[in-house]
Image (cartoon, rainbow, N blue to C red; front, top):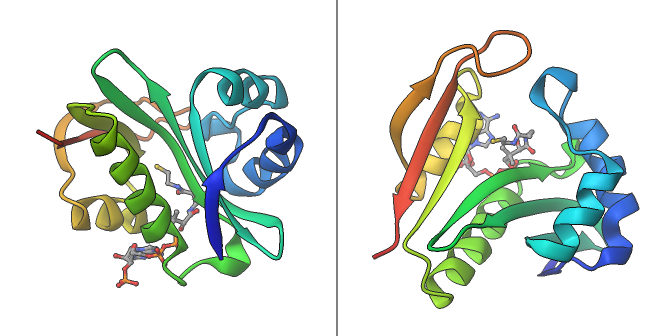
Length: 145
Ligand SMILES: CC(C)(COP(=O)(O)OP(=O)(O)OC[C@H]1O[C@@H](n2cnc3c(N)ncnc32)[C@H](O)[C@@H]1OP(=O)(O)O)[C@@H](O)C(=O)NCCC(=O)NCCS
């Protein structure tokens, strides 16, 4: 498995993976949005035999990054790919001198919350009924400086 920065040509493959990862109520990214973000923001992909099996998308703000999305293909889960993508992203954030990383996660997504907590993210606030099905979002933050 290797992690590289995504290129514009990866948009279609990322979009296909996104449809497996996030159902409608979780606001999946459209192909158009992937194209937009690949031009403007920062996305790292995990590849196995040249196939994208996971990705992490970070939106650039002036002094901080929003971790917009992280996902690993079902058949590749539990192999620390999520950990490695997050490590890669946080290394990038520190190297670029961003002050913090913020993210939103479903309150019922125990696996993702455990992963973020293991990297030192903590809950800043709760957005009640944020998702399409009424689930709350936890807004989590990790300070880098
Ligand atoms: C969350 C996700 C990215 C984790 O990716 P992964 O490659 O399977 O995760 P890893 O193998 O790197 O797991 C690392 C840690 O995350 C936590 N974790 C991941 N999946 C978990 C699960 N289903 N239940 C409990 N803990 C879990 C554990 O702490 C795990 O460490 P451990 O194996 O030592 O217990 C993946 O499950 C996924 O793509 N889910 C669907 C999309 C999603 O919910 N993304 C997050 C949205 S904010």
